[in-house]
Image (cartoon, rainbow, N blue to C red):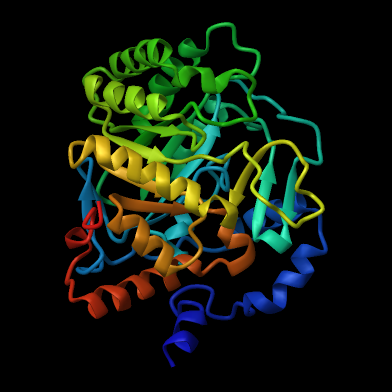
Length: 364
């Protein structure tokens, strides 16, 4: 009975929606990027849902922001900021849009998005394709609400591929997007912009974080840092120290991986970042590594290979205050966040916990 209830769409929104298991074969018959764009177009046609009521068991405060539940939409789905303000209608406690760069850029040539169905995974090499921060800012401003009066929306910022000064691009991102964001994510971990991950090196990271925190000035907008899962122990130590030194508000662990575990799909050899089920163990381990070094001094957000309530629960118990997902939506459908939240409550009740805060890091 519980599973039947979890599989159904929310009655308040999309009540006439066809079950995803019936729609999925039609979407999978399309090119992956075309199907992605079709889902964005469908959401744009939907009315903006009523505000999400915080669940006393799942609500929490992280970096001074109030989250009605811990399950968020990761960056990459809503690159242009067209539907992030509607994602709470699908059960998400927050949504992160982008990545946005100062100037518009087309990204890498198509095809650049691949479903690895046998592996329940995705490979993408989009390359920060977006219409630029100026166009997005105008769009976001039309639905932007004051902090605390609407859904929590983060904005993920990056550097243009051909930028001669990438740190200056991040400074621009802070200046343009901070007034519109509940939080900003500094994305230095995409594998699809050549050389971008070099900003994770300690000297470059110190320069970057110093510049973006200075650019924030007196604004209260929290700044999060998103890192790759492909880090050596020394890298983890350097990043943890830099985040504390520059008073970054939260750390997102992690982005896609350039490693290739054993995969069965014919697309396994495609270049780009791998996400989905094969990333679960790697991203969980990196989260544990950061929690071991940081303890409770810095909130962590777990992302990568989360596709059900049990995996979200494990990430929270390992030290994540919040979790994010995206690739699993391809295989599980748009109401996955709602099902995970209900599943989290079931797991918490089973283990005798009343609130989500009680389980953060208990396995660390």
